[in-house]
Length: 585
Image 1: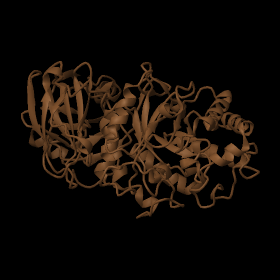
Image 2 (image 1 turned 135 degrees about the vertical axis):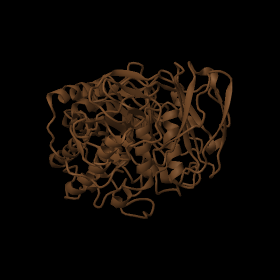
Image 3 (image 1 turned 120 degrees about the vertical axis):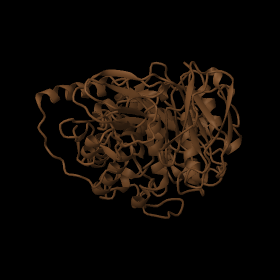
């Protein structure tokens, strides 16, 4: 929680197209067109060729809540859902959600976070200080029938909490749930004193109660502790609770939130229940402790659970981005973003807030974390490993808060480098190309707007070195960029489509679907390279019906419709009418 961050005294990095929207129309398609339409849909959704280093977009809709019961990957480096899909933790930190929000406000928050792609939230089951009437909810429910007595849980309170967690799951979110937040330094911000005074047996009673009450919800990761690592004689306040929960709930993953400047394993040791490791700190060179945890044996997945929040410590947008990108490229399986006042929802906090929590939902940090997600979910992020001794980025990697981090896939097909901001000028980099398996192409990704900038002349042989210069100001007065190097993949043909006339470009995020000069009996071809004429952006797949020129999006989320290039006047006249845009789930 932000309380430990604010008061830690640790070093903190300085600075903190095609006309109007049209109506959906039902069109009749001939049997002839319906046949290739179905084939094309199957081809697009199933047979999309793997672009080296890039993967197909996920479905826009949320997975079933049951899939959100996370488990460890086979190699122990990351988390997977119940279907075995890699789960990149894109987290937010609404610590006071259960105690501070009513039903309407909770809906506002969850809907916004779902829209932005957050899939994890860290939440206190009990709130000791940071809500309007602690420890009561907005509706006046207290967690215990006898104040401070953990052996007297109030069923109505925990029913309400159960509903909140279930609701989060319906919005595609895993709740990283702190059952008994200890409080920074064991002080009045948390429950350490009450737990210690009540003794082990009352704590075990409480642990068995919450384990049984919440074990039916798949979308939980238990977070023991809370801004505090007790001295060894008092660590039973964490370990006894973990073991008691485990008696009733043997399947949900567990982790821990400790004092800043450490990791969960360093704080509590090699505990059997401690499945997921965490990093929590404010070091200027935050990547250093994260790289250390990546190298720790035995291997555990780890997340950046907490660091400087937006709206605190004079943080700047580029600092928030730097922390997040450093985490992923240091080998973390995700990270938690935080914002003041979102973490306490305008309740009591530790820093003055410059806006309401509703306004803060759309602030730069949330926007930039959403773009981080958009980048990495289309890459095989789970295969990335931190480079060893500047094997890829040989020169220009900088130092301290300017340190550029690189991770790559060990098959030599992809590397990703985040270059932090140092001002507005370009930064010189030297890339060692001999580590790549094939010739590579290079692109810059702008972490502030999600756009790519092609590196002119980019097609580098996989030997020797090459010097690059970052594009400079990314449009926000900062010069942080992401460099993506990946090997070239040839175009692939997926069959013949009769009746198509003209050409259209459908940009599917990173891979582009091109119908280039497609006349009768020509093939539909996919190309991995970016077409700078880019025209249509959608989430899943799209196609154009030859009978009507109507663009049909196969995903419920359609983000942009732009200019459509054509090859003859007949098709040009037709495509000018293309503002008709429908989506089908």
